Amino acid sequence: MRAASIQKLYDRIASGQVRGFTVPAFNLRGLVRDTARAVFRAAKRLDAGAFVFEISKGEMSYTAIRPAEFAAAVRAAAEREGWAGPVFLQGDHFQFDPKEYAADPSAETARIKALTREAIDAGFLNIDIDASTLVTLDRPTVREQQRDNFERTAELTEHIRSIRPEVSVGGEIGEVGKENSTVEEFEAFFEGYRGRWTGKPISKMSVQTGTAHGGVVNPDGSRAAVALDFEVLRTISAACRRRGLAGTVQHGASTLPDAMFGEFPKNDCVEIHLATGFQQAIFNHPRFPEELREKQARWVEEHRPPEWKAGATTAQNFEKAVKRTWGALKRDFDALPAETVDPIMGTLEEKYAAVMERLGIRGTKTLVEGL
Image (cartoon, rainbow, N blue to C red; front, side, top):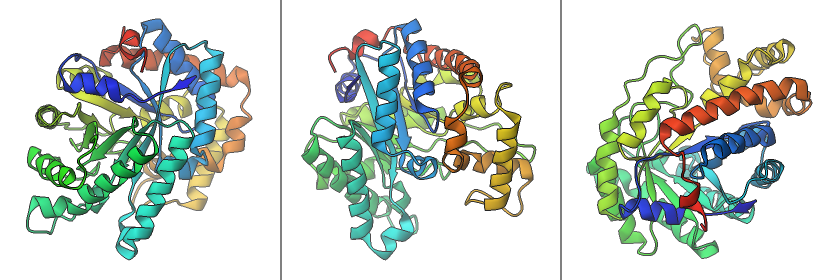
């Protein structure tokens, strides 16, 4: 496996040399080697190369997977599937904790810097900085609202460039699950950011379009329909490209209807992050052990993690909090036999291939060769 930066591809998108597809970034929360193998198999079928493996700061915490372990598992998957070419590993949502930042800005910034170094040292040559949690909407101007965001993103960009200049860096202006992003917010952020950092800038901008991480869970545990505003992606991507960036990034989209994925390339979305829908495909698979599912339910009820809400139904609490069992029950997942895991991964492979096809990355292997 050859870990690589996707920066040069995004530079080509920014300049208009290539377009017509959206890069999927797959969050792998558990069974990483097996799920990565399923991704590689799907990609080989489609001659696809423009896709990313990622894990977020929060996922590292609740899955008990650090960057080195994640990278090693993906590397093993690539070798097992005979993958030739670059592999893009990404640190997703390297997010500032607003309470920790308010208490000690320097200490919280130092923690994010330490995480970026750990990830880069493990081969993560793509890092998404998320200081959107520091946006303060009660300030008088949009620029002042975005100030902490653009200052810290600029500081982290400089830090990353000092370690590995070629790393692709992403920023974020709208916290996922909050108010939809605007072109005005992007312009205010980017002007402030460039005032602080004049070197190679970020390559993309994560925005809020109406989705939420994990989707909006109904009382019966199903996902509610989402009124996603594609105009946000299209208009801010246009603004990004005027500034030399590739475009917008969509989070919280894996539980959307399959037919909707074809709209992202049409609206100039450069990258889309996908997690919960694939997690559901594992946990809800007919071959997933019932005794393990019962153990997950007991763990959620007994431990009541942050996602657990007193006024929610049992189904809602399970669906929102079950992701935390990846780490809590890690030994149980690692002990699953091949006769259980293989059919689940077969289903995942088909799901990965379908998403890749809808996002238009068939035939993109040649675009990333040499990166």
